[in-house]
Amino acid sequence: MTSQTNRTQLQKDDCQYVWHPFTQMQEWERHAPLIIRRGKGSYVYDMEGNAYLDATASIWVNVHGHRHPRIDQAIRYQLTQVAHTTLLGVSNPPAIQLAKALIQLAPKGLRKVFYSDNGSTAVEVAAKMAIQYWKQCPAPQPRKTRFIHLGLAYHGDTVGGMSLSGVELFRRPFSSLLFPSHGIEPPYCYRCALRLRFPECDLACLAPLEKLLQAKHREIAGLILEPMVQAVAGIIPSPPGYLKRVRDLCTRYNVLFIADEVATGFGRTGRMFACEHEDISPDIMAIAKGLTGGYLPLAATLTTTAIYEAFLGEVHEEKTFFHGHSYAGNPLGCAAALANLTIFKTERTLTKLQKRIPQFRTFLKSLADDPWVGDIRQCGYMVGIELVQDKNQKNPFPASDRIGQKIAMTARTLGLLIRPIGTIMILMPPLSATMKELNQMVAILKLSISVVRASHESSSK
Ligand SMILES: *Cc1c(COP(=O)(O)O)cnc(C)c1O
Image (cartoon, rainbow, N blue to C red; front, side, top):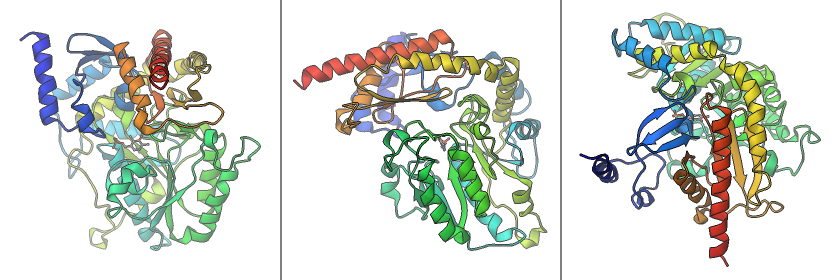
């Protein structure tokens, strides 16, 4: 078979058999799907060998580039030992070594690692841990069963994850399944609900949170948030000081602070974990996406000794944490994750980022004079570019215009993979992306926006 007939057959079979996540399949079936056969560094290649810069980092998971020799090697070595054994009743070397390595890196106070397979389950575990903790802690408070989350947050698509998320579009069909949670107004400085400006606002947006905690803290088990950046919401950074103030409020009102570092962890924001930016420690921390460097599904929920110890007792006391997945602590995934962490050291990834992040920022500035670019938001290697019809009015494009999608499709023809969230263009390059590659990503995006604008303007005349 030539690669073209091979490609055509695969495209046909994809449309016939595969149901893609978060995808309107009717629209999907109208276009021949792009099939990625291989990847290397910041690039992925389709069936014919055409190269695309991967500005999605394979949906935010890739860290050191595709096919990094050290991670490839670690997985190959682990395959000579065993691919999978369970953590129920037995243990395995990579799972042990990784737990130790994670605790050494994690914000202080986090002492125990509970494994699962993806970000949603890591959050689910965090929620269940918090609830059970309050029933079993030294001064039990069984009424503490509710959570607080930010109104635009995304914490996963399992029932617990959805219940704690604020993206209405994803929740609506399932409202009958969801448990109630307090959604609070998120900090979104570009569209501040209070119409204030930082720093003069003095974080006035936190007043309702304090009020809520004052009134309800006896029934609140925990507060969950994505530290520093609400990612799926459209890369919305919280203003400086916000994270620390929320942490302090949780401490003051005896509410567990749960950090969802699924998107922000593993160097994404320029620090190993985003909590480090404001020097805070959560009581529970969920990690996933970048944990294996983007190789294998693995996640973990980290917590403190105090929480862990509340689960200790004789078996008949029924304090056990009854939760666990078949592939928890999978040795291949843990081996990949260990190699991922090693590369941070051997390649001095975080040190290099400190120089690259401001350079990336200067590339992004070239987008500022585009008439559609309303806001450029960057936290490390997380970038959201919010497009608007008019910069002064900040009015968004109607969803039916499919502007973000059109720009992404144009970018694809120019060799860039980008996945927008509505009309917010997202750049999530691997941390290994070179200056040249970052520059190229921004240049292709800039061109794609202007191409789509030209055709939009000519069609609306
Ligand atoms: C992606 C994401 C999740 C869900 O992770 P999955 O691995 O997709 O289940 C949870 N929280 C945040 C902040 C995320 O970005």
